[in-house]
Image 1 (cartoon, rainbow, N blue to C red):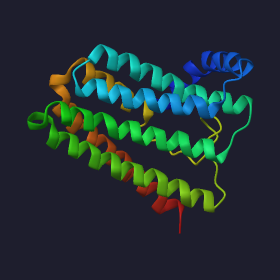
Image 2 (cartoon, rainbow, N blue to C red):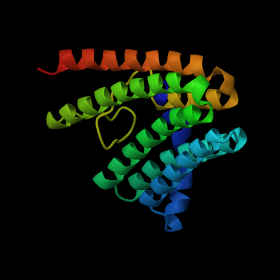
Image 3 (cartoon, rainbow, N blue to C red):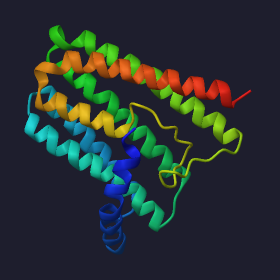
Length: 201
């Protein structure tokens, strides 16, 4: 829901930094790998309670997640890069709930499992819609060039990062945040399936 607004805010500075990195010989794939490494390190920091470090690594990873696409648009977009970017996002999104479960299994494990289930359902609806849209030649350029068809929803990348940051800042609220955001993910998935039901035959 907020991704479109965030794109308009962050794209200009990201494009400027991306241009400097390209002049320095930095490629999009290298930034994608570095972003994933930051995301996994963020999860590791959450697990051991290093919340300040986790926030820093989260910020670095998400900045990199925007930079790799900006670099690719300047140089050359590839299907391989698009796949790596999307897989990296899903790995990061799954790693954070797992980290909170490992941090406090008795308190957090059930809520983390719920959130991972909801992420799974939402991700399945997102990727299935994208696959069928590609088969039909549909595109989604409203939020800039994408490797696959993107459908808007209540729970997108921006909302996920806001929730993750809140969880890190207030780890005692992980359970209610995970339960509530899981519901939002299911609503998003349901809406996407409803759109697909009307759009596809």
